[in-house]
Length: 285
Ligand code: PMP
Image 1 (cartoon, rainbow, N blue to C red):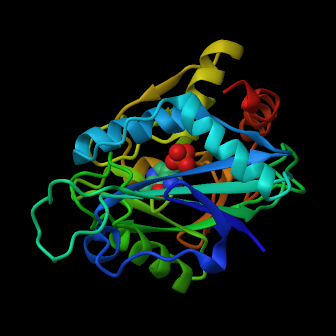
Image 2 (cartoon, helix red, strand yellow):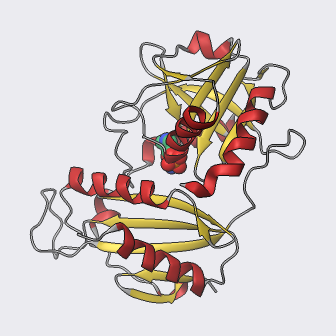
C-alpha cells in the first residue's frame, strides 16, 4: 500500500481525505510538481522546488519552506515507500474555506499532498529499447498562463485525449500563428541538418525542468548549441528529428507526426548521442 503525505502526516493513501470545499477541487486553484526518483535518488529536485516557489508567488499562496525542508519530506516519502523507482507528485492547493467564493479567502491553510507511484526505469539511449511517441498536432486551445504549473489541466488533458483518440501518445500544440508551443504534457525540440531548436519560453510554454537540464547538458558537454526561437508547424513537419521532453518520460523521440514518419521512423542519431549524455548526467541536477 502506498504511503502518502497529507498536511504534515504520512499515511496510507486510502486514508487520505480532503474537504469537498478544497479550492483545488472547486477551482483547480493550485499548483503541482512531478519529480522522478530512480533507485531512491531524486532528479532535478532543486529546480522543481524553485519552479514551485515561483508558482506559489504567482498564485499568492504563502507556504514558506526551503528546498532542504522539502527535500526532507520527499526523502521520507521515498523511504516509507521502499525506495526503488518512484514518481513523487506534489499538489498544493490554496486550501479549504467554509464557503465557495471566487476571490482568494484570507487565513486558510494550503493543502499539501504528496503521492508516490512506482514507475518504469528511466529512458535508455538505445533506439531498440527506447520509449517512442506517435504525435498528432492540435491548435493550442489552453489559457494564456501556461508558464504556471497549474493543477487546472482541463485544457491539457482534452488535447491529450484527442491525440489518444487519434491513436497517438501525445499532442503537439501550435498557436493561431501556427507556431509550435509545446506538448500537452511535454516540451518539444526539433533537429534539422544537425541543428537543434526549441520554442523560447513565454506565457505559452511551461518552463520544463527536463528542457532546462537538456539545455545545460548541451552547453556543458557538447559543441551543439540549441536555438530558443519561434518554430513553425511547417518546420516541424520537415524536421529530421523531433523530441518531446518531460520529467516522466525524459527525452522521447517522435517517430510519427500526424501519421507520417519523422526522419526514418526510428529514434535518430542525434537523439541517441544526447540521450547518452542525459542518462549520464541526470543525477547531477
Ligand atoms: N509542458 C507541459 C504542459 C507539461 O505538463 C510538462 C510536464 N508536466 C512539461 C511541459 C515538461 O515539464 P518537466 O520537464 O518539468 O516535467
